[in-house]
Amino acid sequence: MDCIFCKIANGEISSATLYEDEDFRVILDLNPASKGHALILPKNHADNLYALPEEAASKVLVLAKNMALKMKKTLNCDGLNLVQNNGEIAGQTVFHFHMHLIPRYEGDNVKVGWKPGKLTDEVKEELLSILT
Ligand code: 5GP
Ligand code: ZN
Image (cartoon, rainbow, N blue to C red):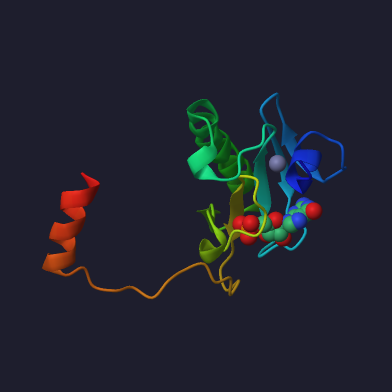
């Protein structure tokens, strides 16, 4: 399979690596939204969150937390967004699971968001009946 993030995660293609262990590599994004924008890549391929094994899924948030703490301390960022896109409609462009760590700075103008809607009683009841 020709997957660029498999090649990066496993060191076949060099990258600016911030952290590596047996399961993950954390690299700087080539097109950063802000200073320090990084990506957590599992070394084993999974297309997206749906396909990610539970063990990797549980480890990835612990790693994200540790990287976030390191960024807070060393970059002195004012906040941080964790972003993880699944599917083209959700903005996924590389189909190897990855989690974005986006440090945020006062006045940075980075846009991560949506227009808030309104949860109606009808939709709430529908969702409670199908999602619980
Ligand atoms: P997505 O839109 O799939 O959630 O995010 C893909 C991210 O990967 C983008 O932010 C893009 O800049 C980054 N990216 C794509 N190709 C490469 C690459 O070859 N090296 C690095 N470091 N980042 C990449
Ligand atoms: Zn891959």
